[in-house]
Image (cartoon, rainbow, N blue to C red; front, side, top):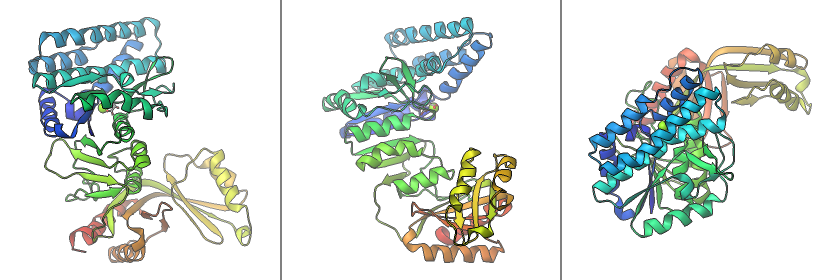
Length: 446
Ligand code: ASP
Ligand code: MG
């Protein structure tokens, strides 16, 4: 068994659904379970419609209705499909009218409302698959074993899911039925519809794969996988063939947001491989995320950067031979609710980085009781993700590159996760450094 998940842009219209059907058809022998997001930007349109209803404006669901009805027509689906969809559209219309009348939109109602996107898309896709003689069955997540808590907008899935999901889905795949399951949604124990947070259907797919002991979870996106660098910075960045879960998590944090780290959790537990593929470019091999890899010769997998970072130097003469200083410093950050990214310490100083969004006045005042503080804005973190057993080689090559560029490295940190080495340069220098590193590690031969 395998799980195949297609996001909104992969099922945005009739043509895309036909295309997805072709991809799924080629994998039927592997007993797939299909997980779908809402069509195109439907989730956004639903949220916009709710906001408009709330503002006492029109109750307008034209965009949503016309997209789904036009898709049914373009796919030449039988009249019964329209009849199946119609009650959902009517229920949505009543819900929006209700929101307008009572002028209230709770988290619970919002989740109920956005759930229509996925519920519509699986019904239309399953109907199309049936029309081309594939035994497909549309299933709402709650009928596939998805139970969550009641944190509307970002619900946590219950451990019960691990038992309930295979119980619901395996008997189907064993009978060669293709379940087409709604991503993103679940129900709490009280029967209220919940959502798993934006982009949550990746998690729906990886959980099904892990819970059912599937051979792999295929996550179909509109990019070639995880790239060696941001293609806006390095034009000829190329897909990384394989990464470990840890490396993929690091890359996600530093901006290569192909798969949310949360979505990898179920597969990390079971060691199930996750394959990120491009539905617009089927022949591209994609990126395989797995527990361990057969390393190729390059010591690094990818380079990322994050701009708009502030570097804070905290210096105390009292630190020599003292204990408890770090604790006091981090307590100050905690009091101000500021989260720190990189940290480097010496005997008398601590350097930390944070995103420039924070206001630092209160923090500086707080810290000035125990140390002198200097904040330097306009910095960037450059991160090299790779095989840290080869860290000396990576550092030597990275610093040599900076030296050639005349760039001063202002702080260095080797991640505790043992897969990343990060360093700080000026904002304006980051792109040049990333390009030069890419050139050295990926283009000039190893
Ligand atoms: N449709 C939802 C969203 O747009 C879930 C998903 O696409 O994963 O966030
Ligand atoms: Mg979406």
